[in-house]
Amino acid sequence: MKEVVLHVYDVTNSDSEKTNNTILQINRIFKDRIGLGGIFHSAVQVYGEEEWSFGFCENGSGVFSCPVGKNPMYTYRERIVLGETECGIAAVNRILRELGREWQGQSYDLLSRNCNHFCDVLCERLGVPKLPGWVNRFANAGDTAVVVAENTAVKFRQAKTEIVNASRVAYRFMAGLASKNQASPESPGNNQNRGSPTFQGAWFKNIISAGAKPSSSESAPSHSQDADDGTPLRRQSSTEQSTQL
Image (cartoon, rainbow, N blue to C red; front, side, top):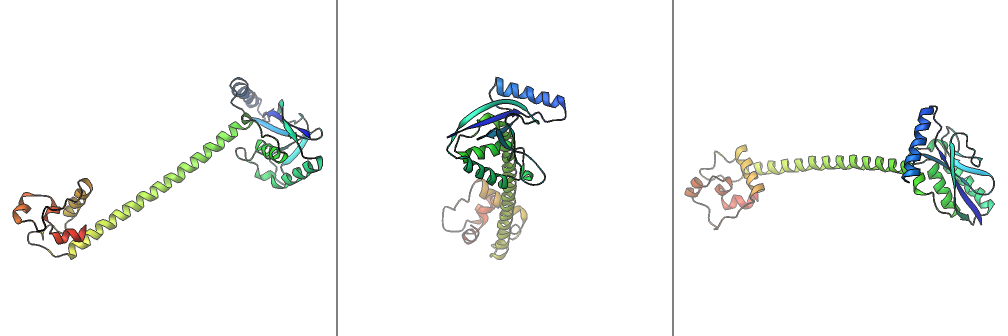
């Protein structure tokens, strides 16, 4: 059994002293006072006096090592004992070689593939608990925000497509009604309104708002009913109703 230690740094590698001081202030407030998290770099130590981490480079592996607590790019903060690994030194070296091939420097991403993500994977391979949540919480929150934004955009596009498709279906439905109206037999008194857009629109509106109300008898309504009832649906014969509905 060999102890596995996490070394945590404040990220102060900016050329601007003002920016570095701002990050230190953020970490003091959000980590030290609130316990939420901050902007941190991490590295894992197991066997020997070297710590292992991951960073960006243009060519080759992004996995690198440096003396424990001596990374010159950042400000050292603290050490956290994560547990003990059952892996021997030969197994640890093999794991590091494998990760060196898998974690190329150009694959580095601040939100989804940074040094803290690498340390999580290394700890998992070593069989010890992963990093405390506060170490990488800001990156995880940013990554979640990106995913939510992308999913929202996808859902919006899907909704837009569904609306367009529904409109096309409604258009075809209305066009089919118009075609059937023109092909069906005309009864006296209906010639002037049968194919007009006003009639079609009124009929479709009645279907949506009130539903198609069946007639109370099997026989066709009389001309006196046509004069009293202005609803176009009532002016259709029973044969026409069965054809269109």
